Amino acid sequence: MATTLLVFLVLLLTSSTSYATYSYPPPYRYPPAEDDAPLLSKDVEHLKSLKAEAELPEVMIELTRVWHGRTKLYSKLHEVEGATVFEVPFSLKHFEPPQLAFQALDKKSVRRTKVKDVVKGFRPLHLPVNFSPAGRVNGTGVPISEGGNRAVNVFLPDDRYLFQDTSFPWSTTGKWNKTGPVGWVKFTPAYNKGAAPFGTAWGERVIYWNRAPGPNLTDFESAFDYVVVVLDRNMGDLTGYAGYRTYSSSWNNGHYWQQIGYPADISSAEAPAFSGNGSITSVSTYSTKGQTGYVLGNFVDTFAGHSGGPYWGWWKNEPWPRVVGTCSSESFDPSKLDATGDNNAGGGPGLSSLISYAREHYP
Image (cartoon, rainbow, N blue to C red):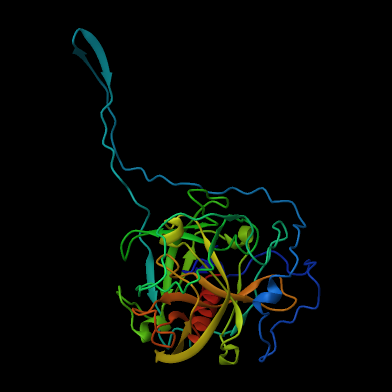
C-alpha cells in the first residue's frame, strides 16, 4: 500500500522482496548483540563493493504530476490588422497536490505497538552496493575560509564531498520539497541537479511526537526532531532501505558514522554530499508523552541543507547500514569544541517507537 520513511529521506519500511537470496557473506546476525559496535570507518573504506545480482525490474516511475483545474475552454475568431486570428483563451492556474494528514502520537497511541530497537534494512538484488559513495564530483557554492567564527558547523578541514551514485544505499537518500507547514511533500530518491533516477513519490501522512516551529531549536526539540512520512507507493521495493538501531552511549567517540545531506554551501542544495569518519561524542536524554529522545552531540561537518539527513553506520556481515539519528541543529558558536559548540542529531528510543508504529499501521 504505502511506504514509510523518515524525513531524513532514508526509506525504512518493509518490502515484499525476500531476504533469503542475499549473497553477502553469512551469517546474518539479526538482531545484533547488545554490545555489538558498528564497523570503524577505516574498516568500511576497505569493504569491497557488491555487484548487482538481478536485472533491474520493469517498473513505472513518476517523474512529475500535473493537477488540472476545471477550466472551460472556448475559441473565438476575430480580425487583427486584416488577418483572421483563431484564439483559445484560458487561465494558467497553479494547482497543488492534496494536503498531508498530520498525526501526533501520544502514550496511548503506541500502547499496543511492539516497539523494536533494531530494525533490519533491505538491499535489493538489482542494485550494486557501495559502502561509500562513488562518483565523486567537484562542488560549487559558498567557500569556507580559515579563521573566525561561523554560525554553521563545518569544522575545518571540511571532509565532505559531492557524489553522483545510484547504487545502494545511496539510492535511499534523496531530496524532499514542501510548501508551508501544512502543504505537500514530494520525495525524490537519489536526486541530483534535477535528475530523478528512481522517480518521485508523494507524502500522504506525517507522524511525529513533537512539533517545533523553529527556526531555533532547544535541546528538547532536537531530541524529537524527526517524523515519519507515509508515501503513496512502495518506493523501498525499488531503492531498498536502511535499517535502524537505537544509539548506545558505549559507542561515544568511536569513528563509525557516515552522514548525507544536500548542503547549500557546496551544491546549492542540488546535489548530495557525503561525510565519513564521523563520531558522536555525547548523549543527552529528554522525555515527552512517555517517550525518551536523544540529543546526539557530534562534530560531523554539516551545513544548511544537511538537516534531516541520516547518521548511519555499518555492522559486520550486513549489506545495509543502520541509522542511529538524523541531523537536527547546529551551535551558534562552533569555535567551542565541547558540548556547547557541537552539532546535534536527534534519535533514541523515541525514534524507535515512531518507526515501529508506522511500520505496524502503514505496512
